[in-house]
Image (spheres, rainbow, N blue to C red):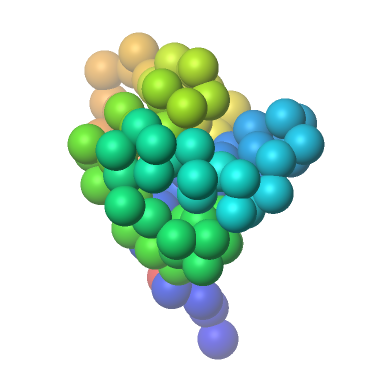
Length: 96
């Protein structure tokens, strides 16, 4: 049975957090300071792909991690590709 995945940025969020030696609680606190009301449990769900990341929430992640949008996408996806939406859709659909 395939697991329902609601985002593709989860692994990158986890990688960025671990590279900074932050706990999920610390990341949640930093995101709260930035203005996103989020719990440690929701950070865990983000990282596992079980919680949807909305477009505006990407900006909080970019700000807290001090990264570009492309740094939150899987390495296999070129954010400048003209068919980005189709590639993202195909990647999500392949997980269902």
